[in-house]
Length: 132
Image (tube, rainbow, N blue to C red; front, side, top):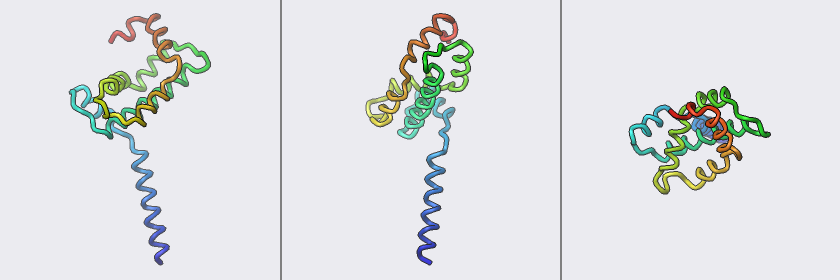
């Protein structure tokens, strides 16, 4: 009987951990705080890092193997990640210690090689695209 209770408690615990780990952050609310100049919490900074890592992973897939970034692809990418620039700015201007060393390392590792060059090529071919 005790083993059954322990196993049941363990299964419930695992389900709670799974739900907590898979819950999506409210990126819109985080962005609203950034726009208002309000400070972010540690959990919000962690969510911003998760967002940026996903973004950079997708961007890396777009430009891997020397693929050229075209205008349609770039516009679709920005539509998929509307908070990219605001979240990057929030990370760049965060107070020392606001972002954990682990999260900072995750961002650096996720940034795809050649990303800046790919964006520069698109901006040179369509200067008005990034003017907003």
